[in-house]
Amino acid sequence: MRVVVNAMQMPVKAQSGLTTIAAIATPLGRGGVGIIRLSGAKAYDIACQLTGKSSFTPRLASFCRFYQADGTIIDEGLVLYFKAPHSFTGEDVIELQGHGGVILQSLLLARVFELGAKQATAGEFSYRAFDNDKLDLVQAEAIADAIDATSAAAASSAIRSLSGEFSGKINQLLEQLIHLRLHVEAAIDFPDEEDVDFLSDGVIQDKLEQTQAQIQQVLATAKQGQMLRDGIHVVLAGRPNAGKSSLLNRLAGQERAIVTEVAGTTRDTLSETVVLNGLTLHLTDTAGLRDTEDTVERIGIERARTAIMQADILLLVYDVTRDIEGESTPLQLAEQLFGELPEAKRLLIIANKSDLLATSSSDRLLTAAQIKMQDKGYEQIEVSCETGAGIEDLVDALCAKVGFHPPENSLIARTRHLDALRRTASYLSEAHEQLIVFKAGELVAESLRQAQGSLGEITGEFSADDLLGKIFGSFCIGK
Image (cartoon, rainbow, N blue to C red; front, side, top):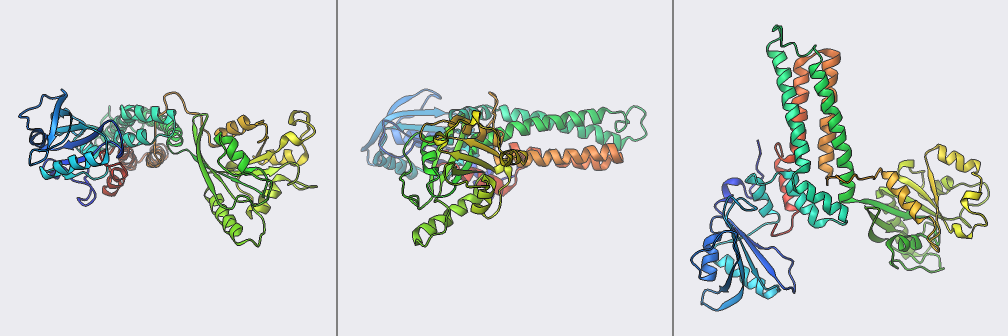
């Protein structure tokens, strides 16, 4: 069963039908059309009073003038009426489409409030749709994800989730868990029945293992969806004049960072978001790491170290003509600059200015240090920010480093979805152990119950109050 959030966070179901809400649904500013959306029992009557018309036909646009209380015209435009329950929220919904512009929209909204509507809170329209079973929690989140998408792939995945594909997969798994619980409960309630000894005949084990495999498949898809939605945070770090800012400019495709031959040009962190190979990269350029007496530069270096600690992937950029001398190695340089050697899974070594080397990488034999570095799982990419050589290899290496290879049918996902799926998988593993090792039907049933509960959080069947408030509170006003 669904639970409702605190009334201070979001209107509960009992309040939804009593309060008519309104909000501007288009971005404020100069534009051809501005839309004000109303939802609730008074929405239809407000539209009639506002326009002087006695009736509206559902789903048929009507040209109207919008009037103040004294009969002066505020604006003119279209009125669309969606009769409950055949609307986005499941309530009577009115859309007023007037001219775009801050003043006109504000005047029209103020008049709507005079006629009895209340200001909608962030995400309240979507919450009412969820509360009235017009969509589930995954679909509600997909609305915000589609609006905020930073790439075509992310937008497409969000729309698939909005259409119910992700929810369908979760609901199918929930049905399987329910049937599993029924089998186990039957084995517990009728232990002596000849034809109901399900715990030992292999049926439950087969179904449980099938469900476990399907959970892992959905989890893998969700991981790709999370990267589509959130992207990864990549920090470029290294010594001064190693080419960090040049690499940022090359990846961004424009001159975002100032590049000079003067060491210490970059004094602060500089961020840029780009989409490469379908993956959103939140790039952060940092000040060169070195000892300095310059107060401003030292502040920049401290900020650089903070960014380094928070990075999903750390690019150690070094100048192949200068930064590695004698018997030193890139790993020794990394340890020197960062204080400790980062894990291989989050460190990618970038050998910049490879165009200045006498021979190409294909003509050079791997050194013992390079072989040892590869054996430890560290990877080095040779690039030239001047010529662009190696940049495609770098992007491919980044995608491989985080395991990004979204299928065409990828679905947008959030961190909470991954958490719920991982907990579900863990409970199923416990159920499998209790079944195979201990033959403990009661414990199997309890683990399956917990698995069903965690999986149900994804679509909102078992959501906590604070979770709903946080999700819908992140929406924009008018949604």
